[in-house]
Image 1: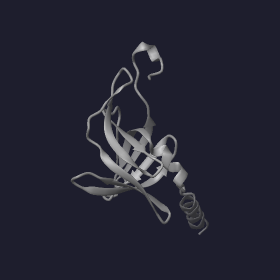
Image 2: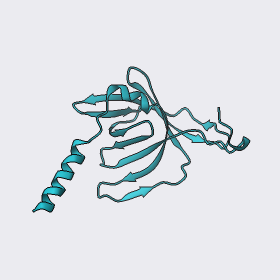
Image 3: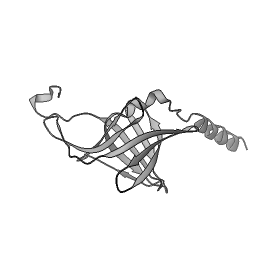
Length: 147
């Protein structure tokens, strides 16, 4: 009985410690994000090694912006194209969502975790996308900082 009570107490602590995302945290979304893994509804994971593309977010003070796929280059620059998705940040009760739209469709993802270095979103198919903050790759000039 003590073990059951202990497990229940620990579970309640984890539920009570869910990160609260504030409106001020929205600025952390802007930048380059590299996907680390996808966690499926059944708990299985797909891990990603080196990525050919990153997600670039640009969100303004009105909580609207864009997301586009960019491809990092060895010289620290990114290849980009004209394709992008409009993004709006929406707060609903204790949740925060990214609402995407293109001329062809609309969808939403719930932000589960948002820090300076980590972003976790949950889509409608119950897939969790785990991202880490990324920067330019620079293999030229022996590690000098990329512009």
